[in-house]
Length: 390
Image 1 (cartoon, rainbow, N blue to C red):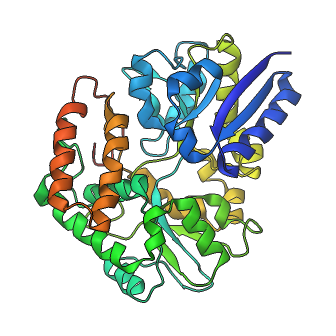
Image 2 (cartoon, one colour; image 1 turned 90 degrees about the vertical axis):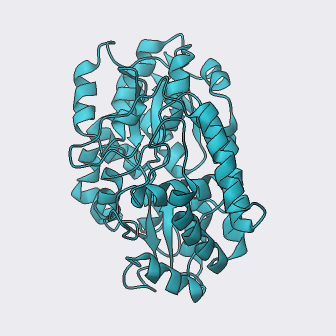
Image 3 (cartoon, rainbow, N blue to C red; image 1 turned 30 degrees about the vertical axis):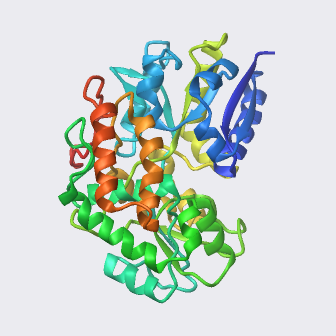
């Protein structure tokens, strides 16, 4: 029996869905895929080179693609007998999600999990989400708002708000944000940080969703990567509703594109088998079937349009789709991951008052000059209705 190893992250959305899908795949094909997981932070910190040597299949974050492609760590998914399936997936992309796994004309991953920063709230306690930032701050003043602002999430908020203002980071390769463009964004973030619990500066979206869904103290979070699990009946004591982000200068456009994609290690000794599983798990019937039912968050439009999935998740997919379709794509260059890892803690330090905003911008500007260059810039294709923001 062919046996493949896969690495993903620890959450039903990342692990349980792959295990259930692999069991079905073994029944249908006789190919066994054994999935393992690490914590979300450990997975993010593990060098991709190490993982690529140990596993055939990897669930990755799309900004890894340019460097991984340059270092020949990921196998191309185009030109290997699946081009018809690949074209169908590209046509079913949610905004730039599918294209974010492409680089230099080749596809290195499939967007099996699509997400962006969205609003989340308790509809049993709050009739509707705050639609403007003034409404968010008014609720926050009452102690009713949570916001994940550990370094990577605070950094993500900075990028979301800048793009929504029409001044996206790295609009010119080799730059980050000017003081003038960063000022209104940081002002809003400081106001929010002053009005949410101190522990939010150490919280990720899962911790915020857990607090909202198990306690009645807080009502909403204005920006948090969406997890459809928390909108499903029985997952936690209280269900959460997800919706578009608060409206800004560009409406709900500019939210940071997140999600995860399945990729194949270029070092695998079973490339054909690994590719076959990747395309199978990304297929519409699997995504809207066993993958979703086991806790997965599908990545392509057919599943997001599915009536059963939306009925089951309080319209998670339709309710956040406008935000996702107009999401901001992070810089597409080899140095981006080093930039993100280095700069993210500085944002939280600035929110804590440990670093001035001016120093934050000075540091990020110097870092961008070194790492966010144009040499290998590859922007994924975006829908005609979406303004290019990265």
